[in-house]
Length: 131
Image 1 (tube, rainbow, N blue to C red):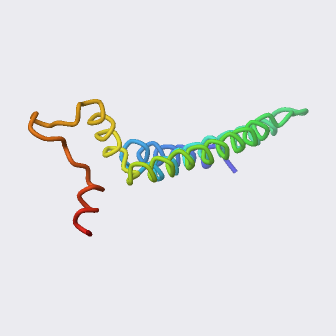
Image 2: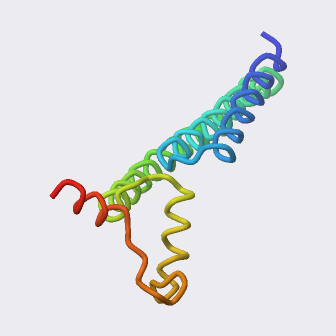
Image 3: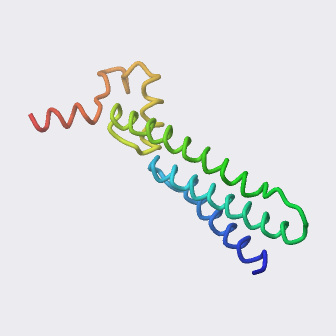
C-alpha cells in the first residue's frame, strides 16, 4: 500500500477534527474533535513508521512507540477533560462554551445591567416558574 492513502485519510481526519474544534459550541463535542485530531496523528505516525521500516534494515519502530505514548496522553486528557466539563455542567447548568464565556464575563461585573436592579440568572427564573 502506498504512503499516500493513510496520509490523505489522516489529513481528512485532522481537518474534520479541526473543524469540530473551531465550529462546535458544546465542550464534550470539542473534546471528541480533539480526540479525532489525535487519532489522525496516530495514523500518520504508524503509516510513516511502516514506510520507514521498509527502507531500513534494523528499525526501532519509534512511530508505534510514539503512538502508544499519544494514546496514553489522550486517555489522560479525556479523563481530566470530562471531569472538568461535568463539574462545570453541575455548577453552571450548561456545557455550551459561548454561554460559559458570557457567564464568566458577567460575573466580573457587579451584577447590574443598567444600575437599577441585579441581573437574574436562568436557574433562578426556572425555579420561580416551577414554584
